[in-house]
Image (cartoon, rainbow, N blue to C red; front, side):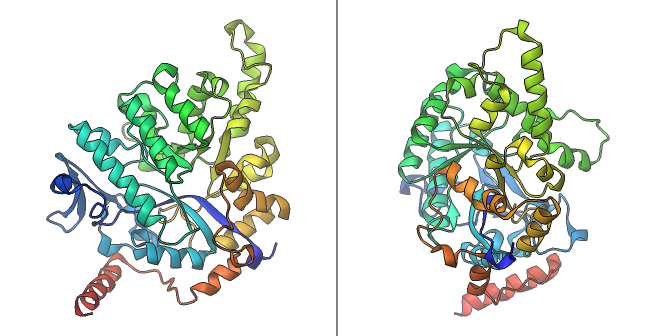
Length: 423
């Protein structure tokens, strides 16, 4: 395939929330109680709310840094490439990378809204969670129509509020919500408890909203050696998705709610063939356990409900038909350390060729499966001929892709701040 003709949608990226995000979305009487981004003694911003704090870990925004500076140390806005937190700069970076549309997961709020769940005042936490969603939907995602796919966070600590917020954001056009992989790890009922989660599953099924299970919340399931390096967690993170899949598939949710849609965000796809083979073998061999999948194999049920998302997985792409080529979707992961920028089209094209993926299947994986699964019209705001890698790159030819140290980014940040003050 000609790289210039590719169309690319990233179904997993991230936003580092800007300090003023709550400014326009919190009711006046609660503004003083809203989460606030406050620099610590070292200049690193942390979000504070009801005594809890959360900062940005370096690996979450290292795009544009030299690899040797990556790490788990805190990061500040001044050190980041502006596309991490500035929507206007993000769109330019997307243009340079040939990305038509992007779904951005939260940073400080957590993929499972744990930041708000841990607040003592749950009524106030709900107000702020709604404000967060309104900022994400009404500012970040509407600034450039057709470029951002909204994904809401939810009040998982209260079943009724959970359903109500799904309905509220769905009415605003949201097609995706981010949920915990393993809710029991944060003190909630597991997904086996359909009395607790059933109304939620039923609501998102009826409204055709996708449940995104992004790796990260379930890290607590990895009980590794206490002296193991951080490599263990990073490499094994995607394996947690098998735990979540097991709870939802064998716990009954996928069977009871046939219209339930689940995206395995940043989970990779290499685990799926073995997992499904193991499920089918177990089901047919261990019939004494009495599981009933309605005349289907577990693998069939899984594929009916799932979108399997990956950044790079050349070996798994070679067995893509064992996974299900119609349920695989690509993601960029900007601005995290796994992200492919600014040459994602070239990287992806080479990986596809190396794995023997024909052009029609490239289209499926890069955008067709995603838009079908989420019910999106990718060309509603941008004509198809203007959505290609070549056309998007022509929109922002001036994007600077220079790799800079954190210190250099700080200098540029200071210059921008002074220029803004003098404007």
